[in-house]
Length: 410
Image (cartoon, rainbow, N blue to C red):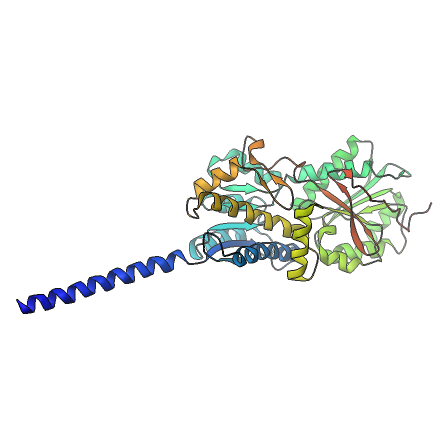
């Protein structure tokens, strides 16, 4: 009998220890970091954007962690370099981040331009991106299985049309209605300026020069010869590689025509603004996803500058907002794992961030953000080496004065 009680005592101790270890394990698991997957182009000619994407997510995570975390858990970013944005790299990123790294949400500015929808859409994990391409959005429209994919921008064709509408509203009398369209050889750029080309023709412009060029072009003489021969009064240039833009404008200014120059999306890249400094004063450009000039946007910009020591570029505010859209839903539901509930919450509830309002209930296909009025294009001009906001959603900003570039004869 004595032996029985001794054995029973040992068994009881073992059970108590096992229970304690099990409870401690569950508690430890519940406090593991919440992982944010970031498939981003951190190297290659999209690296300027990739840096902004990463910084935007890091700023959001930093703010959340300093405030005690999300549902009491810290957050961390797990990146995957998709380099040149090729489909196979995006597919590898999806499988690696979700299957190996076990991320809880995926956020990026863009990744794969369509391939990402199929790569991340096959999982339940929420995927938020600023692709804004009609190819990617059509995939979501046509396949309800991809309902976990949310876009944080309108499609590129909307931006192309808005670009021309803004040019048509400039307080400047163009000497002629000839336009030069110069496009970096990548699908997004082709679609943006393809839409701009169509809109220009609709509003009375003659396409005088229409050229597609490879990234990392350093010698612009052949294209500039065509421009100098035709003397268009408007040049639209689209290339996300900052040094390409710098060399083009530098060589244009050696013998300029009386042309307004719009360098498009590159204006939203701090790297280009630094390279241009005061030598490109008068050049125009735009951003599709940037902090609005309101209190929320200004607070974001100041926080970003304090953390990274530079102005936020195109994709920083976009990825910041994207993560916060998901965080807002998780807080409301008090749940990280129920992806379908999070998806439904995002679909049905408007989130107002630094770029504007994200309202997915406005469209039949709830994951596609088509209301560009709520996330407006921002058009800038370089003045004294700084980009100055001139037009918001095509409307002139109060207090802005358009400066006729010094190279234009008056």
